[in-house]
Image (cartoon, rainbow, N blue to C red; front, side):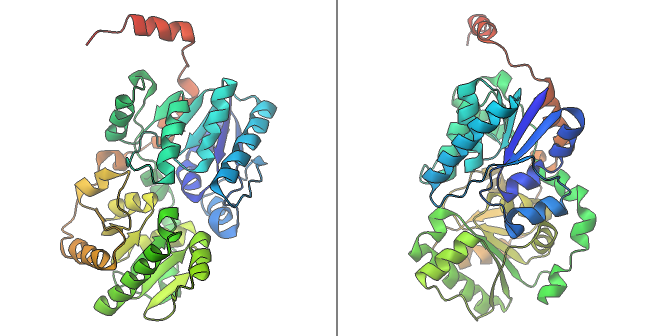
Length: 376
């Protein structure tokens, strides 16, 4: 059996890092990188630190617009699938890399989708459109949580194609504990545990709107003035470009806008922060595991389980609301229990068994199942 895995962003590399070696050991496995984020800080360092081998293929996606990027991904995916003729395509998440599912579906190649079923129910979020398209092009769907499974069922996807695997991030963190603990990030930045804010900001709906971007920076200045703690901001290239384009002043007042961190350094900074502010889905999960208060700089989230357990707070973009959210989550940080799916072990092994062992029913068998399904 041959499996082709396509990835293209840091979250995908991280979450697939324990799965890729297992697929290499047990199947004929081809690993492809779209190239959309492949540079030293955004991808290469993560392959190195997480011990993931180099991809077999680079798709060379280098587009400036979302439409052009998706177009290149579709075109390059078709070439890869026709060259390698895999029995399965494995993808993860909701980025443009996952839109490769469209081509696989057209070619009759089964698509296995990790992180299926996440929904924020706001189509202004580009990833929300991707999620729906990818899920409905997929043959086998592997959501992390029962909530996500129920989202898929409500959209008419058959339950026998859905397998809840649990979230892979804990297994990745546990496997890399030594490197994380040895990180010199705090010493290098001259900060102390629980005495700094950690910030990430990259989503188009935030950084491409000047008023929102300025409001976020205003909120960070207010937080430094209130608490006296430095604000460490891991600056995504997209955000840096927009800061420069809009002429936003990010200097002084305790603000430290820095190049993106490697995996070990960033996880160490997350684990020891006083509070995290981010628009990242990944960070919502990690902060929940670490017991660190997190303010999500968005109006919606596709991970509502983090709100329910108490680890996360949606602030929106208004500076005053952001500062109020920080006050609330840091004062009422009595501890919480992460969702059980976030504490799952052996997720990588579970995914590999599903990819290798689940037989896709043919059309005749599916029709028979539908005719004989219990009524009601």
